Amino acid sequence: MEVQIKIGDRATSDVVVRLRTQDGRDDWIYCHSQVLVEKSKYFADRLSDNWPTCQILDSRNCVEVYCQESEVDHHVNVLRLFYVVLDGSVDDLWNGVKNALGILRVAVELGCPQIVTACVNYLEAVPWEEAEEEEILRIIPGMGSQVEPILARLQPVNQSAIVGIFISTIQFATSSPPSPLHDLKSSAQEQLEYMVTEDDDSPLLTADDDIKSEVKECVRRLFSRFNNLIEALLCEPLDAFHEAGSLKSFRSYLADLLWVCQILTKLEIMRNFVNSWVDLSDKIVNIFTQVFPMVEIVETKLKVIEVAAKVLETIGYGTVILPTAKRLHMVKLWLPFVRSTKPLIDTWVATKDEDSLEFRIDGELWQSLESTFVSIILALPSGDQAQILTEWLGNENMQYPDLTEAFELWCYRSKVAKRRLAMIKSEGEQGMANTT
Figure 1: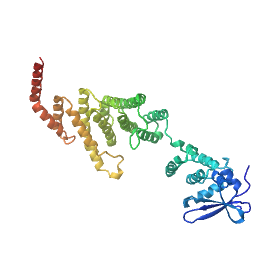
Figure 2: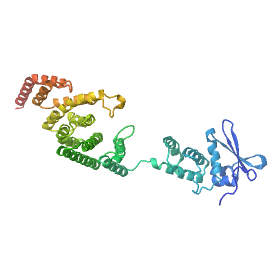
Figure 3: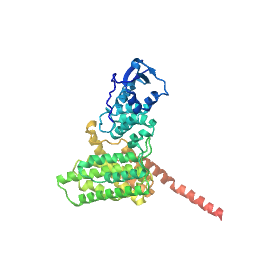
Figure 4: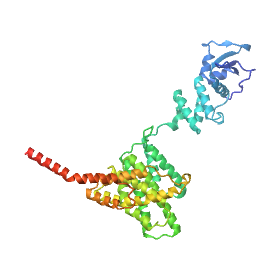
């Protein structure tokens, strides 16, 4: 039944609720005992025969409620809501999330189940600002099970749902959607990297064999499309219009491959990527001599070098093991490419204002590449090392990459090789003799 009486109506009021604070504030709210008892366990107890009450003017009962200054308005709002029919037909009672949280806290303290339910329904349904979400996380968990629905959107998700999201996202993030979807794709890539990164929290999921298999398949399809583009570029002459479009597609694939490296490294499944890049390396280098020789492609070359650097680093430090012939070929192919490209990039960057650069160069890229080349070279047979170092010593651009470290170690190894191997052979023969 709808309540006809109104809050503050002194003519019909039989209770005064005194809201008091430590600062001396003392607000009198004229109410009705039948409403207070029906809507609040706290007031029902205070107005029962088991609780002493004090009398004031006109023989009204007085119930004192002590609260903080910041909570006075929320207490007044709760009292007003006692006189409202909370049947869900009115949604604009709460004046925002912050106010609703204040009302909820008071309603829980005063034992007002109808207001608590209505408040929970509101907070569970509306969007929150970041600060409001933090406030909800601070106060809601201590209020008991009746308010738990508010936290539904913040609860941990079961593993199967996470896996489903991850697989759908990796499929989209490694696809080649139309241009209008590129921003969405970039966002998907960012979130995937966030999912598998360990920071203050553990990664969102731990990749099992099935997840790794799906990721590998997505990368395989990405390389397949990239290969198709490269073969088309190498086989068909392009006019200026199609050349620009193809260059844009080529850059897009490189950006995707560079991003994929981050994901595969975190999942520790770089092998297939490395093998695919090694197989395509000759074609990729040929692109710059046969298809785009006269175009301003500094950014594209840099992207190629960034991806190649990831692959070479994986090879150089033994993360992925390749046969000697493939490692030698990668050095002979990419070392000259990097050597000839770095001056172009340095010159191009020098002519640009820093704020106008369309891309940023990792300051550690060149140093890391140099160290990687040295590592790969020093792991090759000494004869292959000699061949590479001979070419380096005769090149006018020998300052980068600087192979001095490899040269010095090759000289040392070569000079002492006969003595060291002879000693090893002698010790081996002596050991065999002692055993017999």
